[in-house]
Structures are given as C-alpha cells and as structure tokens.
Length: 246
Ligand code: VGL
Ligand code: ZN
Image: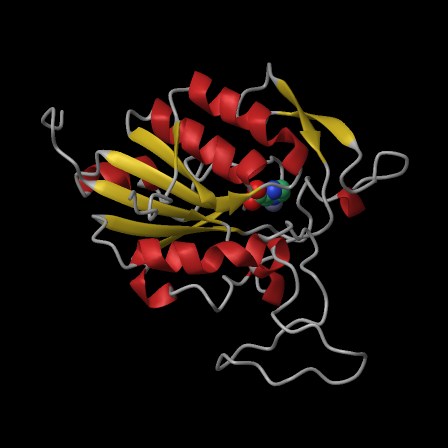
C-alpha cells in the first residue's frame, strides 16, 4: 500500500485521435488545403467520423499538463478491427443507424450476461489515418500507448479493460510505477473518459478528471456524467485559478 501522503500522479490521455476530432485547423474554400504544419501528416478535409465538438481545442491544455512532472504519462487509442461490433455498418437494418441504434450483445467473457450498447459510425480502424493520435499532441512526452477496443465482439470504453497485446494490463503498469493518483483527460467525456476514470477509481487510484481537458459526444449529458463520476469517487478538477486577487 502506498504511504498515506504519497503522491505519484499519472496522466492518462484518452483517445485524442483524428476520428474524434473536427477537421484540421484551417477552414478553406473548396479546393486545395494549405500544406500540413506537421511532417508525415496529411490533414483531413473532413471532420473525423465520430468528431466531438471542440475535440481539437483541448490539445494545448493537455500539452501543458504533459510538461508537468507526472510519474507516468500514458495515451490510449481506440483501436478497432473493421468488423467491430460497435460499428452500425456491421449490422443489418433497421438496427444500423450510427448514434441512434442501441443493440443487445452477449458478453463473451461472461455467458450469462448481455449488455446494451450504442452503435457508432466506423471509427479508429486499425491502420487508418483516423486512428492516429492528433499531431498537435506532444507525443514525444508520452511514455506508453494503450490500444483498446481490439476485441471485435465487445464494446470496451475503458482503458483498463482487456488490453489485448499488453498482458500486464494498465492497472498493473501503473502500480509497477508506484502511481497513486490518476488524472484523466481526452475524449470523450461521456464515454471513454468516463469509463476509464471509473475503472481507475475501482482499481484503487485516487482519480480525477480535468474538466477543461475533455469534451463530450453529447454535451447535454455533461452534468449527469459529472454526478455519476462523483458517485464512483472520481473528482472533477480544474486547471483554472490563474486569476489574481486584488
Ligand atoms: C469512444 C465512442 C466509441 C470514446 C470510443 O473514445 O469515447 N466513444 N468509441
Ligand atoms: Zn470506439
């Protein structure tokens, strides 16, 4: 058990990927776009397939957090096979409407269980540009990347669930580094950030979500998600506080 006042914080950057972000930077008239500011990066003329409003805007604040001395800095990637169960396109009508359809699936890890799950546009398919971390993220400062959602049979919003190619799992990795506190940022507040933060708290880490460093698929559910997070012992923190009192 960590000592009472030990503070070894991890930064967990969830799914800051092209498919969850609006298109890159410059809005241009029809025709060719300006060249990319980033080497080896071709900006997409379209929004990511599951773009979250303001998704790109949180990169600067996450980069500023990345410059702080966190014990461990981890990024996650939603990383689906093309035949993933959460893609509406993989289901017959009428239950194939992205954002709208909700289906019941069997839990292959527990035969007696089923779960209700929402269907999405195809997104973050392994090997496609949409699955890449956005280039404005200061990737060189990230020590480990977790690829999740690789089991085509299940939805897995949490970075702590069944990490296919990493048999140690994220919780073990954090514990090995002596991590005591987890700060979760990224996309999307109401899905992967939410489930990842709740699992971090369940794993025994003191867990926080940084409010300005996340955005929701359904912004209307923001307060509801906050109440739910609080119920799981996850605290919302803010990096504001730059105001000077006079
Ligand atoms: C996510 C919907 C589908 C997320 C992932 O990263 O929040 N949302 N897959
Ligand atoms: Zn997904």
